[in-house]
Length: 596
Ligand code: AMP
Ligand code: GLY
Image (cartoon, rainbow, N blue to C red; front, side):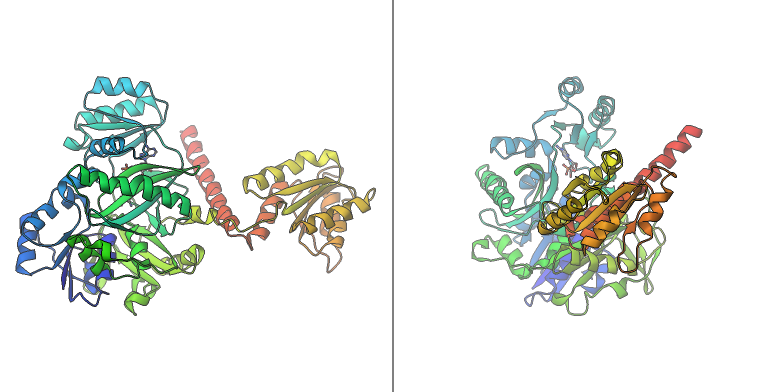
C-alpha cells in the first residue's frame, strides 16, 4: 500500500516514521515534507495546489492520503480526494470548521452543551467594545478564521484589548480571518491536549498529552506552535479522561453527524482542567504538533490499519494499543522564533542522539525534523521549529532525562529550547510524603522571625514541618522527645536555629541519624559566636552549617535532601531556580530602563 502524508513539520515526520513500520505499507511519501524526513519517506516537494496533489494521488495510485496540516483540511482537500474516489484521513471542509471557524466551533459547543468558556461573536467594533467593557481582565480575543496559530490573543488590560479588536476587525491583523472575532471568558487551570481518531461514528483514543505553548520557561513570553510535549499528562486523571470522553468527544462526534457534517479524522480537543472540571479551549482538526511526536512513539498498533479504518468507516472493528512508557518531545527552535530568525545554521549531533534508524519500533529516541535542509551531507536549519527530540522512558522523569541527554548532543548557533518541559507533569507525581518531613527547632521565641523565612519556603514547596522551641541547655529532655516524635512520624530532616553558644544543632545531631542543618542566629558578637559553635562539630557528628540567619537556605537544603526521594520536589526545585534566574534578568532590564 502507498501512503501520502500532507504537511511539512515534525508532526508529519513522526506520522511518516510510524506509517513506515506497517508491514502493509510499501511506500511512504510526504508532500511537501522537509529534507530530514528523507530517511523515512520519499519527498514530493513540488505539488502547489489541491489539483496537483489530486493528480499526483491518481497518477501514483496512492492508497491512502493522511492530511496532517489544517489549512488543507479547512480548504477542502479531503472533499476533493474523496470526490475522486480515493481514500483520505481528515475531515471535510464543513467538518474542519470546528478548527477553521472559532464562531462555528463556539456555537456548536453551545448547541450541544459541551463545556467551554462563555463567549460572544462580533463583526461590529462598537458592539465588541461594549461587551468587552462588561468583562473582567484578562481578555481573550480570537480571530474567527485560521491565523497560523497566532489568532488567539490574551490582553492584560482594556487598552490592549481594544487595540487588538480594532486591528482584527479592520483586517490589519489577520486579513479576512480576523474580520469576525470571538471574545471569551478567560479560563484558569492547567491545559491538556486530547486526541481521538474517528470515522464519524466510532472513535479510538490516544493517551493524554500536554503541550508547552509559550516560548519561555515557566510559560512566559510569546505563544508558539508548541515547544515540547509529553504523554501521558498526569493532569488528565482517569476521572478527567472520562469527562473528556462523555462531555466532549461523544457529543461532538454525534453532534457533527446530526448536523450533517460527520467528522472523520483526528479530533484534537484542547482543554483547560481546573478543580476536577474541564472546559474546551479549542478544537483542532488534526494532530497537535509537537503532541503527535510523543504519541506516535507510544503507539503500538499499526497506524496504517487504523487510518484505513478511519477512511473506510470501519473503526468499530479496531483496537488501539500503546506502550506503557512515557514519551517526551523537546522542540529545538531557531534563535528569535516565534519572531524573526535566521536560517541555514549547520546542525551537528543529530546522528549521535537518535536511535530512530536502529530498529524503528524499538527506538528509544527519535529526532523528528520540523525544518531542516540537507546541504551535501550536513543538515542546516530551515525553519522556526527545527527538530523535535522525542524519547521514551519507563516514567515521565526517565523519559525527560533520555530526551534532554539527546538534546545535549545537538548543537547549532542559537539553538533554543525550554529546560522545563514536563515539569508540570512531575509536580503531579505525589509520592506519599509524611505529613511532617522537617523538624524546625529554635532555641528561643526571639529566633522565630528568622525561622519564618524557612517556614515560608517549606510551605511554598508543600513540605510539612513542625516547629518546636527547645533549649539544649535548659530542656534537653524536651529536645530529645521532639526528635524521637518527629522521626516516628516519618520526619527526615532537622533544621536547628540558635544564637550565642548555639549547642542546639549539635544536641539534635547527637540524637538522630537524619541530616541536621544548623542556622546560626545573630545575637552577641554579630552571630560569629553561634556560627563557630555550630560549624565546629566533633568528627562523625556533622551539622550542615548555614550562614548567619540563613534560614531560607536551610529550607532549600532541606528540600534538596528530601528531593533525593520525591519526584515533585525535584521538579519544584528546578522551577524555583528558573524563577530566580528570570528575576535576576528582569531586575537587570529594569535597572537599565531606570538608568537610561
Ligand atoms: P487557541 O488558538 O484557541 O488554541 O488559543 C491559544 C492559546 O491561548 C491556548 O492554548 C491557551 O493557552 C490560550 N487560551 C485560549 N483561550 C483561552 C481562554 N478562554 N482562557 C485562557 N486561555 C486561553
Ligand atoms: N501544539 C499545538 C497545535 O498543534 O496546535
